[in-house]
Image (cartoon, rainbow, N blue to C red; front, side, top):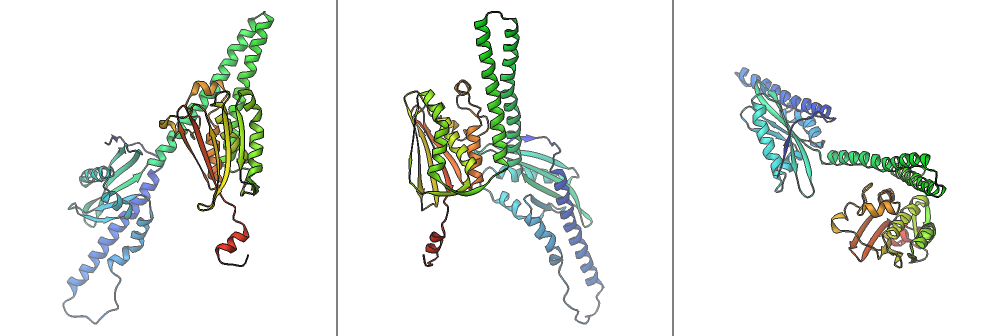
Length: 402
């Protein structure tokens, strides 16, 4: 399926114009060279002395052709008869596709017809996937020698759309997350001002403290996420995994005791990784906090760590016996503000940013995080981080003397 939308000028217009001018240079340069060579042939009536070998029109176009091969846009040039005279590699991939991208090639052919009639056209093709992808197809009339031709360009806008969606959702979510406690504070303050019962005033004051803490936690998590995303103040050093895990467990212990959830840790001693202690402790803490919040009283949360020498990673696993995560939500739990159970998350003080922090910490350390779950039985989060390679291990791999 595909949907065609209207043209909206964007940041890609300047880039499109640069590509247009390059391809126009190819067309005009090639045509001029061809005309020049043809004129010389017509003027020759008798064999001329052998001249030094001249550079062919194809060679004259090679630098520009090579430039077009390096860009991400697909570029197609059509002459006035409708014959294709150039297609770069990016456009060739689309033409040869045997999936939904064949719809993009069909749109190229449709817009080329319009361009040969002197009209500039743009169209968006949406492929619903999964995963969903978005392509913008443009076609422009151009002059090729003394005749008309057409230039078509194909741009993959999938990442741009994804980024725009994330930005839009982020603004909407942060507005909602801060508006709720601030609005509640206003109502509570108004009620408190008119209330004379000391006991009720005390309860209202307690609610105000709770809402203020909720807003402060959201802001603190946003600042933490921003700091981690940009790698600010990151200090990488050799760290013992057991010590980092123990620090995270110590931080969550009070909350776990209040929830009636037992947290235990076990793993291989002496495992070393290279990383930022603050970031890694924060990541493990957020995994533990998420498991504790979504576990029932009397259940347990386990954190284990081991070395996978085949994949050259240290694997840190946090497993709980909580409510679990629906399969449809597993791919989204690491997004900012995404909550499987919004009501429970707000009741437990969750900001929806903890797992997003974990994902960015993993990326900063060249690792990754994943989740698996069975509803009603619990969830399992796996944080994989690159092993620290010791000098003796490097010598062993290369056959050196240890």
